[in-house]
Amino acid sequence: MSALASILSDFGEALEFIFTERESRAGGSEIGGTQLLGLLADHLALSAVALAIGIAVAVPLGIWLGHTGRGTFLAVGIANVGRAVPSIALIALFFAFLGTGFVNVALALALLAIPPILANAYVGIRLVEPDTVDAARGMGMTGPQIVRRVELPLALPLVVGGIRTSAVNVVATAAIAPLAGVSSLGDPIIAFGVYGESGRLGASIVVAAVAVATEVTFGLAQRLADPLPSTRRTVPA
Amino acid sequence: MMLAQSGVEIRDRSDASCVADNGFCPRWIADNLDRYADPLLQHVYLTLVSVAIGFAVAAALALLAHRRRWLVGPIVNVTGILYTIPSVAAFFLLLPLTGRGNTTAIVALVAYTLLILFRNMIDGLDGVPEESRDAGRGMGLTRRQLLWRVEVPLALPAIMTGLRVAMTTTVGLAALAFFAGAGGLGAEINADLAFKSNVVVASALCLLLAAALDGAILLAQRALTPWSRAA
Image (tube, rainbow over all chains, first blue to last red; front, side):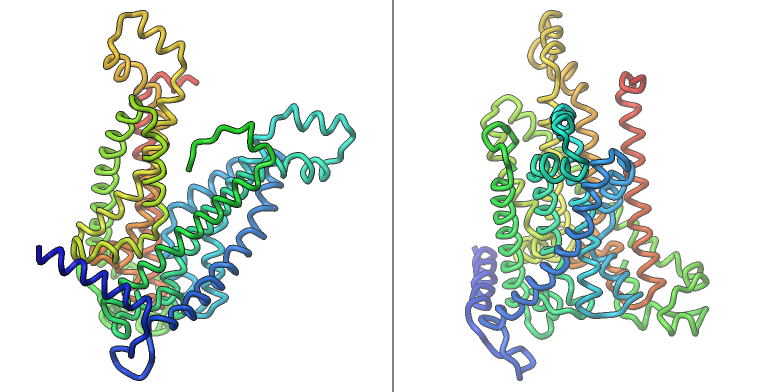
């Protein structure tokens, strides 16, 4: 019974941290409550920049590899290696070799975002029926026209699906950005001495909520991106 | 396991100037490689135990959902939410319940394997050709015999693919297990984030471990499905 009470009080204090400001443990600065809004803004800015870079690199590359039918090995290989690279290793490598800073951490996160987007874009283009592409060619479409008006629209749900996976990944990993000296919602998690127990747990709740919200938002975008919604039967994910 | 907690302790012995510059120092690495043995073993332990428990749970769920189809949706949704929660957050959310240490790390890591493993198991079972089932029934197999002698063997490639993805993903996530107080190679990375030699060695060991486990499953798959070798 007392164990349960202590767990409940831990979470109660964490919720209080999320909604009300208080002085930091060492004194001097206000933490919690509205201070988290600033950290949230930092977190989202870092994630958005990283995701944008990842999309700008991986979508065109994946489409090109898929359209030309070359580079199966490359697309699949990058996806496999990418999964095995620990996020903290990427951030640490960028920090050790390039130093601290918003741009360096954003680049590390962008590298993390690339493999799923690349693999999904590649597979999405490859899965377009060859008959459909033939029909487009028969109508006199050029290569770039086929990509833009046939392959890309049909592959779009998978492309957005890859972006969704990466977005959740990036938002989650941005939580350890403070290890490399860049501010995010992970601050209270990393700087335990300043924020204490309730700050760490409270920030963990917020980070989890932001990740779930990202998943839901991009899941919705994925559904809207489908040009043939009624004809597809996909496993709910 | 608790070798180096601060940047000062981790550096000693040879290559003084290179080490002082936070450089990439082959000699320091050669001299200090043994530091990483215990964290590596702890990393292997966390990964194998988590994937093994995850596999057992996912298999039980898959067998259940294979019989009662309506369960597939809810199970995918629940494991999907677990998969979405960032591991760092999950470790700290579990701390008040399970305390610092291996238990917290393993519970969180198991949760991440479930979606990957379950989905591949169900996809594999769904992909069994109806003709194969018919042939099995024609031979007089009971439902249970049909499952274990026809459906599961034919689903093995998909199941093993899921196992490989779950294994490499878990190696990566276990690098954050130090947040839960469970050590592993991530603890070494975190012990001295600015020291290039340290970061490179610990990261490389993570990648090698993932590649080795992946290769081991691939070999096991070849051994378990001799009929697919011809194709």
